[in-house]
Image (tube, rainbow, N blue to C red; front, side, top):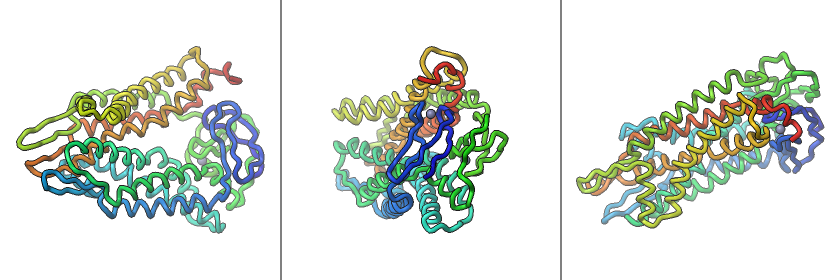
Length: 407
Ligand SMILES: [Zn+2]
Ligand SMILES: [Zn+2]
């Protein structure tokens, strides 16, 4: 890839990206944000991983994920039976979260990667390639197959003392699928794909150094200061996300409000031999701790209680830092922002555990598990904190800290 000018998507520094060869990568000179990497086999590798992941996704839907034996009664769970059990329990909204985050967004993302890689490899013009690129970038944060796999493992340990439990064929497919999906995400370099797309369309490489040139918030493409739509992915562009801080505050407040019912109300209800035992998130943690499953108790505590609180505090700190001029350097806050983005999805693990238990344990009066209202509120907490982090324009931090530019 020839040398060209770029603006860093996180600190907004205008810099020269040197010529990159296969296997090389470049990061921002000021904040260290990843700018671009050129894979060794730029189109074959993403295509191979994406195809593998797509096949594994189909396999993980085809067979049982888990099976369970309690007192001679057998039960098994497939991916779709877990969604069906939620719909039957009137928790269709959680079923939607499950289907979207574990099945739909990854499937669409993988198809998008294959579509683009095919077109670029064989230099063919396919319709809507720029919109497909934008879609793939937007879907990326919402894929949670790896979180679901952790959810299965946690359920497995939770149930191990109660019943005989076995892993189904689809569990292994799901595990490999989540690995292949993660690999696809790492080899799908947005900047490189976008650059090749421009090359395919015969657009000249951007050499903009004019004052006020704006980088696209979605794909990072460098646009002239008066451009309204991104030249590469056609997203609406702006120098800073409009009302970013106000929007982030509003979404954060919604998440904080939902956090109250998520902890006060039961996340699931266990019915066994006429007894109905509701349990909240914290009660679940205490139960696991008392059972001696310390690692799982810690995982659930960290994912469901600590991570949301840490996210609330860090998003609030970021908003305050963007509005005032505190002592810490802009780089410090940028790192905080990256951490917030990274940990967000993992809170969904407890919701997935409830989903799995509901689908697996439905043996009438002997033992049945039902979802509690907190499952909906908690899924809401995760979604709204993720939206809050996504709506925050981290470049505002660098605007508020002009004196820290060289740190
Ligand atoms: Zn930077
Ligand atoms: Zn763009």
